[in-house]
Image (cartoon, rainbow, N blue to C red; front, side):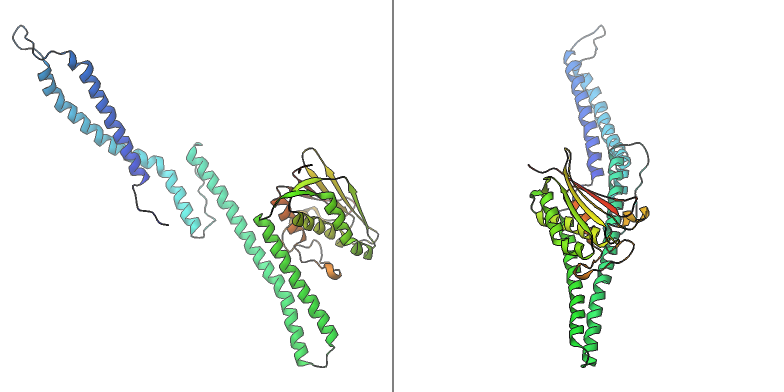
Length: 360
């Protein structure tokens, strides 16, 4: 809703300065009148018959006072206009930067110099906001491009299979149906993962008391057939660990961590250990797995969308879409927690989640 135009801040400051000087001058004249002229008699005679009296002083003083008031008013207007312009110059730069950002240019920075004051703090905060916005927009664009690419693959496979079925009616229908089912399941899984990631990013969920140890047992029970298929030992240890949040999102977080540990545990006979611990300052969930060595420079990229580590791994119904750790990171961040990924010296990865303590 657009508001009516009003006076600029510079004009308001100018009028304020001029008004202040005028009021100060008027008070000064009032003080002179009260403490000087009031003690001068109305009529007095000196030796020559002429001496200062109140009437003569008023006639002499009034024009000079009026001239002084006019000078103070003009001086206040001119000086106030100049001072207000100098004082508001940083605000003008910030306004220009805001207009550029509104038009889509997020790369501009104010970088105000000089001593630290309120305008300098506002400028630095605005630069920080622009930097975060630019990074967020770049991340969203990269995410959208990756998501469209990932969705295009199963859709292209489905279209190709349908064209093959139309051109070759004699082709084995069971094989085509199986491949179509797999492509469709992958597209559905990717879409659900994208929706879950968006939901956790928005933080639109109801918080309640959750026990991480129960979620760890549920996730381990769900993924036990996959672990047995790959001949991996899956252990869950630890005591009750309470936190506050969405049970559905936290369960998906734990499940993704355990699934990632199982799927990327490339050595048969490996182990995956899920441990929960209630510390005085946080509720901790740690998922540790054996496997191939993870390069340290690769670890910071694992939580980015559509990153699958050193290679793609697809295992039956648990084919990854590259959003597992990205969803984990988003859920942890939405619950005001931290996620720490560290490679093991013997190979594999240790994922440590720290969440705020919940009610006992």
